[in-house]
Amino acid sequence: MSLNIGVLAIQGDVNENISSTETALKELGISGTVNGVKTTEEISHLDGLIIPGGESTTIGQLSLVNRSLKTIKEKIENGMPVFGICAGMIILSKTANDRVVGKTNQPLLDLLDIKLERNSFGRQKESFEADICMNSINIPKFNGVFIRAPSISEAGPDVEVLAKFDNKIIAVKKQNIIATAFHPELTKDVSLHKYFVNLIKKSKN
Amino acid sequence: MLSLSGERINAKGIIYDKSDSGNILRGTSTLKRGFAHMLKNGVVMDVTTVEQAQIAEEAGAVSVMVLDKLPSDVRKAGGVARTASIRIIEDIMDSVTIPVMAKCRIGHVYEAKVLEETDVDMIDESEVLTPADETHHIWKWDFTTPFVNGARSLSEALRRIEEGAAMIRTKGEPGTGNVAEAVTHIKKVNDELRLIKAIYDSGDNQDLVRIAREFKVSYDIVEETAKLGRLPVVNFAAGGIATPADAAYLMSLGCDGIFVGSGIFNANDAKERARAIVLATTFWNESEKVKEAQKMIDERQSMLGLDVKTLELRMQERGSSA
Image 1 (cartoon, rainbow over the protein chains, first blue to last red):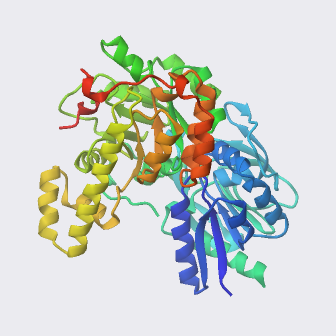
Image 2 (cartoon, rainbow over the protein chains, first blue to last red):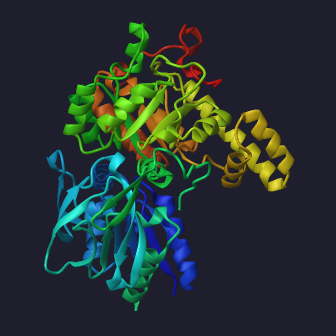
């Protein structure tokens, strides 16, 4: 059994996620392919999808244009594991507000019952790196790279909080969905990508 | 993982701070270059007003670049072109959710400091404005805010990266609506990359040393770039892009994204054109989608444009030799 993993390739740091996932597969000794995906056809064949970092307004609007957003939603509702990173976490959420601008009208998947604040830690100058801890999934120390990152102010009862930083929720899990406000693909550490690959493998069994 | 070649771990722009949850770092190469990575496959649009910035955001731009005048108007106006009014930059930052960039003059350390204090997300040390220092660019390692710089060749790009640029845009000739120069320069950079990659693959280190001397950069950055076969930072195309087909063409040459200057807001169909250029950039390898995008615009509404050969002011040459 080979896993077919996709990285949504509309906009953002697609290649870094492809290479982190490839490394994760290799280190785990699991066979699989990782490709950038854009069309509904490509997405319909996937076993797992990463929605990467980028600009959430751009990714959302353009995946609406080619109808891939709808296919993604159906696949996730049917159990396909998905990993949303930064912009990806925003797109998975129910509502998104910008810290300064307020309510946004951007297209969202409405799959994670979370209240999300965009640009929650400030603008680029305030972007930061810090060690974070995700004990519940056995990743006690991870270098979190937060770039104009969002955070979650409220999470619904079925959403498991994986990590907090300065009392803000920055990583969550709900069944087949995981989402982080930081960028694991910008670091050498592929433990989160490994965790995601295992999630895909389990879903196939 | 990011390429961090040429990074300075002791840069003044790196800030060590403490928070309730532990130590934090700001202004590292990972954060600066990582920011540029989030823009990939996107369009950055030049804007001069809040209204234009909102049109850009609605069209799907990944960021806006605030200027006092669009490059083509800088050409017409003559005189000294400086950084935009801070009030306008702040108004734009308060009205869009996407990142906001602004231009400062080449070498003008204090325009850059002002922009950093204003909290713009990226500073463009730009040849569109009148250079403040003909021999030195800003030492960008001193800043926490990331910089983007223009380049016409690989050597220029690597010099800028060694000064701390977190992103490169291959220069065209700004404000002309003529994509020819941008095409020439991205092809030149690609040729030079292929050449040093071939030298690296052949194992001829001595020739890489010669290239480093010729480029006036360190051996390390030449070696790393040669190994990667691409620039170690994100590289966008810029200068003279006016239509969706222009954008798709430059993407096909291997750029990571597009800067559009005068091409959108000097056209008479800015809203449709902004959207169409974003679509063509995203779906550049699907000809049918590029055609659909091109159909959204009317050539009779395009900016007239200028033949580069007749120009008295060649902005692309500013700061190139430094």
